[in-house]
Image (cartoon, rainbow, N blue to C red; front, side, top):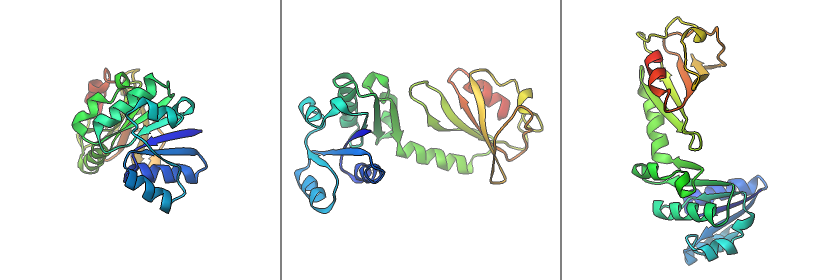
Length: 218
């Protein structure tokens, strides 16, 4: 599998090193000449000096044969341009983009060629909320293509779902319970699994089902 990663900052280099170690064909693009020369001198990574926001540069990097492109620069505008060019000009099957400012998250969608967006600030916020929130629904991950989200609810002592089997909850067809964490142990849920206070219930929900699932669990 051929992967092209734009942006040789700490994120881009870390991803490149991980994939390279696993045997993938990885090309790292960077427009800063000094940084590029430093990486070439100190690593065995395949680093190409170019501006990933230019079609000619992406063509030289071999995007026409790329299976995955990762726009991992520290600039959201650049990541959007790279994503759009990768998808529209080179029809890259999978485009992943880094979101630096969570306020820009709404832009990172298929209209800009983004198949999957990754926002570290948003993920950290979700992890904090997940750790301290009981009796509220927290979004852990959004699946861009479908619009569905992975959400988590830690059941409070007054949750309407307590002591009910999952099949009794009348969960809408647009949602499903995918996992339960109880006392630190993973439970694969079944229809007869009974929910108890303190259970961390993880569900996949579509936007249409979000409010209904929240009402059933919170």
